[in-house]
Length: 72
Image (cartoon, rainbow, N blue to C red; front, side, top):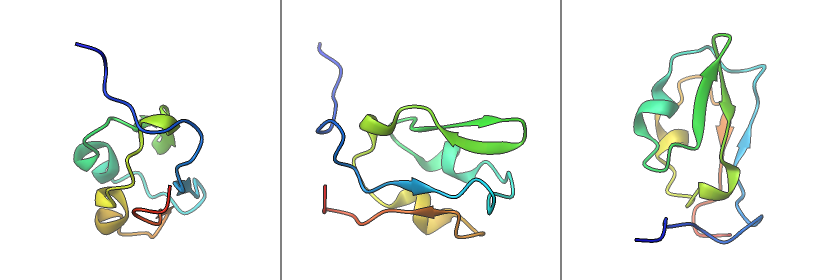
């Protein structure tokens, strides 16, 4: 089965790594494995896999992630 992907280069996902507190919640709730922890901070490792579901935004306690669900 071909890997499921969203449209390329249209996601509204934004991560402010300076605000990230390293809680790992985004990596736990993202159904597409968009995030990975590196040196105690979240980073986007697969931007185009983001389907703008908002799970990361709703669970980020430091408001380091923004996305406009349904826009892309």
